[in-house]
Length: 368
Image (cartoon, rainbow, N blue to C red; front, side, top):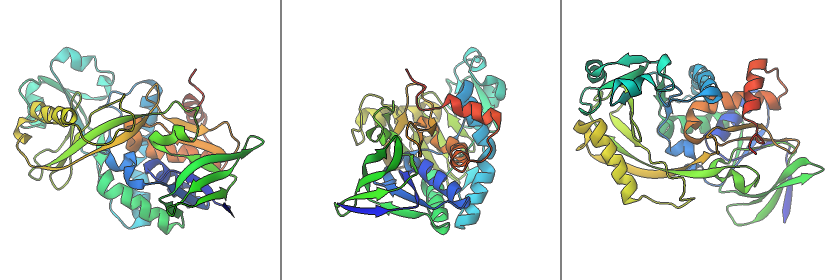
């Protein structure tokens, strides 16, 4: 077995969260190496890119974390665009949540943050919406970003420009430790060779696969199937967040349709007739006019979920090892704040009391 020493901080996982943290740390002058098995399977590539702490009805500390990250989103994206020279297609387009009646609208967890819509106003915001929807909430502050086609690629390029080192096709087999300190990892590289990489600092950003590295983490995969349809440009100007289905329109008229939420299938790959039927039924209900628009692509992915559907952010039980995983449906939304909090902790920068208390809420050992 070959062994190599590294003065680089190791990021174990090359998805959105790993790339975001690498980008932030590299900006601060840290030497960073990303170890990734297959970046294309990361949740950041398969998500719809909604920035929706209010439209999703988040509550309590998760809502606070989401709101904080939403505030940071614009400046975060500008920094990525400046470093990469690429456009990320961030849109503060607003999101509409439709309801069957006023009562369910007014009792929505985040209703106080939105504008209440009657049926006429709802139809003005969403021309062509299905007739069963009688009320709505408009969250103008929520939006979206084209994560699949723009953000992920821009982050990769920005990290490269800042000197981040990439190892793709690498499977991290286990963590090395001594005297309760992180010492590096064993890997199997793309050529099938087993190697040891020594390092005193690392971050577990392995998404739905994080439990394979730290068995104590209560992380499990939630499979999501999605598809896209091509509509006319500007046919849909707002994101529509319906129960069980959402429609996310891109600048060129492409509409992302998601997503199933399959908690008990593990890592079973592939599309299913029932999952695709669920998405089609959602289109038929929310926007009947779109039912016959051509389908462009179908895909699936695995969200990293915890028992309370909130992320794990902060130090692990090993000195020198941090954790940033379990973001479930909100990885794209929470990437800026996760990267900032983790990087400040690693670089021993000041964190205000409010953020420190928030981080305490999302520590890894909060579960019984």
